[in-house]
Length: 232
Image (cartoon, rainbow, N blue to C red; front, side):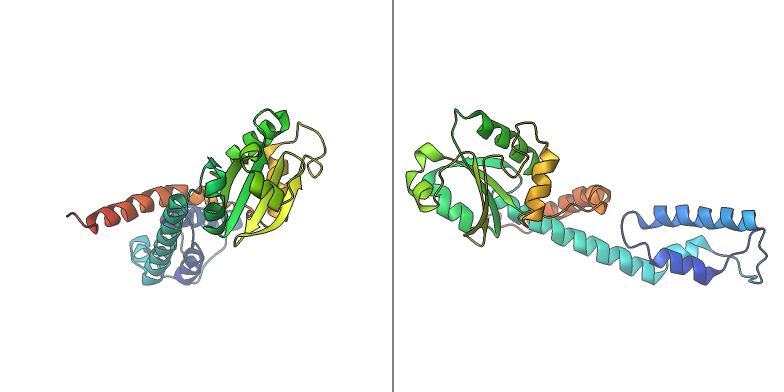
């Protein structure tokens, strides 16, 4: 029977703050066993590791509870953003413009012309980015039908993508001059430019790992909302 230091295993498990805690723990446990076998190292620790006991470790339970709480907050934020029209690339009218750009912290607005080919290229890329960067609002406005704001914001060349923070226009992309000047730039190229300008955030690797937790936690939040709603 291979002996292991319970403290070393607990230390390893305690660092697993993201994803499926026990699945990751099992993988690390196996790695440590293989490493010990290869090294043929002898251990002076006679106490066997009881995995059942580790699964009941209050520190691990606390980490798991904290992670679930953080994910719940993230779900609640996402639900609030969706209520404000985040998560999709939407067309608005001139009458909606002020409410839309002042109603969210970060807004990307594309002033377009329906007959311009390059506007359609921008549309394609922004439509792809909107669901990925839900903390930023993505909207479009027909420049022909918005003469007041076209003049107010000095929109002279289309496509024109204006970036708003707290309702203030802080930057803009005019044509494709910042995207290589050609029509065949990738969505990632536009995404990188918008990240550089601070209007969207770089996606972290763990985002994909959290998807399953977010989906399950979203269901819990929705269930709680339904249960606590006014039925009258």
